[in-house]
Length: 568
Image (cartoon, rainbow, N blue to C red; front, side, top):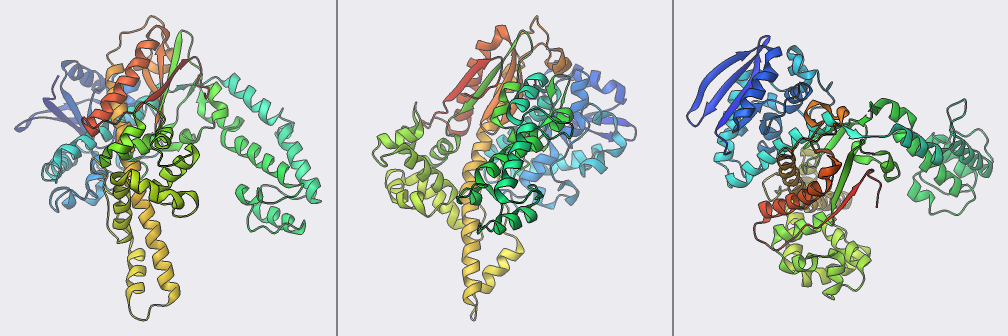
């Protein structure tokens, strides 16, 4: 059903105020008790055609989900403000005159399920106004900013996708990722060894002992960089740091067990038994996702390390009885996005229906797949030396439009300018220190050191803007994929087998359980798994058409249906 009504929610003392808006502005007002709000929202959702306007999704939606209420659409004013206040396509009026109190950073961890019923401390937590008049005024500014922008259609799409992402993030926290504690414990024990009375697992203790013996230093604390660096130097190793990459360059009996120790210690600290006790409860891992947490639009996480889960723990991600996991990831997302946004038909043809890097080899532009991958990634990330630098001329001859786009973005950044993604998210302007360094280096009397430093910093900024347009547009494609898939999964029939731990909204329907840049995991009733897998593919195709129209670029997925999310 086409959208017809917007309802602005906000605080009104100890109650919730709601302004219902139609084409002509506010046409109804209501005041609702907190206890009655879920039923009130549910009733209006049943009518269809509603978009909820609220200050921050993490304040409103967790409580609704806990009460069994799902909403179809919203506009998250904080996230939208963050986009519009920097967007190069927005005129100087509108949002740029908005109050700075909407400039709060992405919200951190909230107590899921209780946030809705704690109206009094909303502003202290989010930093953005929660009262309905402020929300209404901000919404009006945002509408004006989009309508008067250079490309309202694209910017409106970005705002909608960003807000849909906020709904997805809250829903994934509410439903949780199915997690088998026993499987996790078995993995840890197999890798780290049995825990001793001191809590140090056997394999970690053994590796530490071998390092100390090889260094001839039985008391060195391996987790202290200062002590370890001193001990390494006493053993004759000329090292500047204790980083793994530098250590691997040296030949000494202490290096292999030290690298092993670092690997085991990393697993122990990041995802060991303490992590398991803190983050996995009642068969679910419930991380806190932060949409728009990175300047490019990529997500971040506020707890649990959701975006850095090691692949060796994937077997612990295990569907409930009678349910399955549909795990899907897109191959070479960012290079395909570059082909689409630049309109480079040569690069699109190299990617069509196959591994993109093999496709580049097939064009004879580059002879080895590994070189093709390094060269193209180097072009997007600004590598100028080694294999990437050597092969850049071949890429420019074979894929001129794609290379011209990233080169222009880099030049713009080096000059102190800003760049924008396909839909209009704009990179931050350079900070005052950067501008001052560039100014001083351009003046008469600038020292060689100042000139060298300014050039280096300009190149750094160029590398950032070069990648910003690609990574940011890839994040927009992923949001479009998520939004379409979320809407389709909501239409699935209810299952007979209930995943009770997924909560009242998602216990009987397939739902998104995890997202990582170019990968999704859907937890689905077993009998719907094949249909969900097909829908995941269709949603990816639609996301491509939504962003790139009929341009011939495809986004092939690797889709797996399994009880676990074990890496392929």
